[in-house]
Length: 304
Image 1 (cartoon, helix red, strand yellow):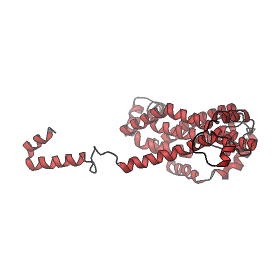
Image 2 (tube, helix red, strand yellow):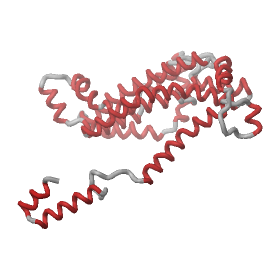
Image 3 (cartoon, rainbow, N blue to C red):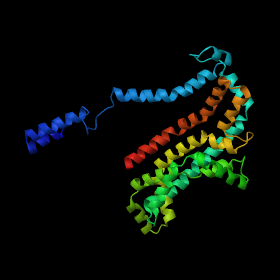
């Protein structure tokens, strides 16, 4: 506000009035203003998205807290008192703890490897100049258009020749790097990491690997955090390929939950209780790492 009298003294009353109108329009939320607040429609849309995201989990808990006799009479509207009993049935019917350990191992190793190799490839595509880099990047991106189902038969043959069928290696190795991860990290590093910074590190005597480790990797932290989260969740919920290549005695959680349908003839109270149990680790992950992920994204946005 102290700048308005100064403008009036130096440029006249007309310029001061124009500046005052511009300040008022920014405060009222005019386009380009910094004081604009979200309106009712924005909060309503976000609330609808949140409710739509929470509803499947709430519905699973609602059905999983009743028994089959209550469900056969109609849709329950309030939670029942049988969730603990249904959860105990899930633990007794399938190798739940072994499947949980397998899912944690596969998801963690896959997320770590995808972040590492995708960041390496993204750094190379974004900051290194070599012949055929653009064509190679286009080829990598084009592989995302190939349906996963088309590669199942040759992939299974390769796993069988390696003797990995029934082993967790058959699930981990094919997912150590993804085309989406390479594209994601390439686009982020191309804009977030200045070429001058890499040149300065190289002039100081660092190798290209050292430049990646001490400069590229810290700069890629926000995008790497989101890629790790996406990969972990996608691997945790993956059912198609683990169901084909793993044995029922050594399953991941989605494969183990499928066994509930055969054991209980699609008793939805048991099946959905198992689904809720398999979702709890993901909720804990979001609760523990959510704040760090958001802070990392905001730091990256401010730096950009």
